[in-house]
Image (tube, rainbow, N blue to C red; front, side):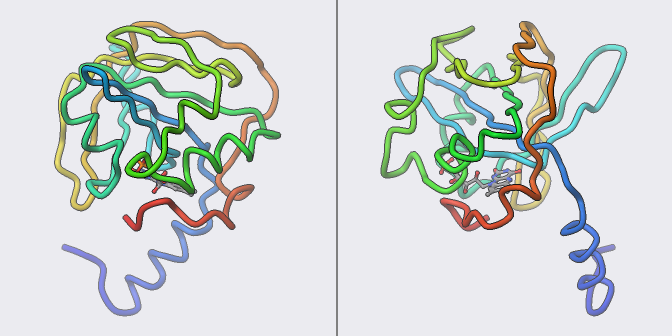
Length: 166
Ligand SMILES: Cc1cc2nc3c(=O)[nH]c(=O)nc-3n(C[C@H](O)[C@H](O)[C@H](O)COP(=O)(O)O)c2cc1C
């Protein structure tokens, strides 16, 4: 059953109160690279380790991820609003985000961003329809922590207008 009327409004208010971590999810297929800010994402299993990343069907990242074998999930330091703005307020439909930041190719060519608090690369095990988003179920295969301080949260970038409407 879907929330509707007042329930829908209250549901929206609750999700607006969540201060989720801000992730940048990148991917590659052939010569195409893509990446976007994501907050609809979470660890989803402990044994085995699994992570669920939900990508809007509207995003350029979705088009590339549909053909990809891997996603890289990055977490940011709390002073990295500018990097979040690059990946969350612009679309790869009209610009090359990877010309504006430092990165190196990881498994399957997936871009691994240099200047982040940490990242892991996940093999896409399943794609699950979730409505206007599609969930990618990931098996982590490589990971690195670079900084153990406070991470950037969604509240810090609440003024950003997404590069694509969802
Ligand atoms: C705070 C915030 C949270 C977002 N969360 C998601 C998300 O969970 N999943 C998603 O697909 N897009 C999310 N977006 C939207 C994309 O990051 C944004 O539309 C981006 O510009 C798409 O880039 P692309 O077209 O190059 O893929 C979010 C944007 C912002 C600003």
